[in-house]
Length: 158
Image (cartoon, rainbow, N blue to C red):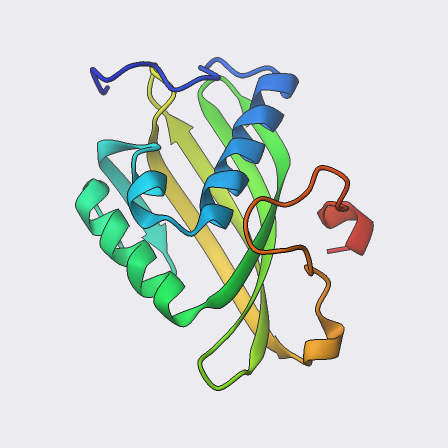
């Protein structure tokens, strides 16, 4: 458990607080600010993300820097799947293009475990992606936070 100031909402999660935690995570990732995002995790947080296993904020920040250097115009939507105690499961989709202008959509699921102060101690992600045409993109808001009136994943049938 971290001794830093609590990062609300705190476990145990209700449906409302779990939805809030998911939206805060989405907002952070849509900022594409690796240093800021890494602060949501415990100093020794352990991840499983495809074939990479970052451990600790430093490695998480390095991972996210590499990710967003190659995944350009990244836009993400997360949606609560399940919650209980200090755990939350989410499903998500994101779109980005590479440096050659090729667009992709990725789909995934994450299992999160939080410490008592609301920092994520474990993140297990399963992700797959496929190429899409630019005209098939669904996430077209200006870069940054998804607007409150933009539809979520269920709207798109993802």
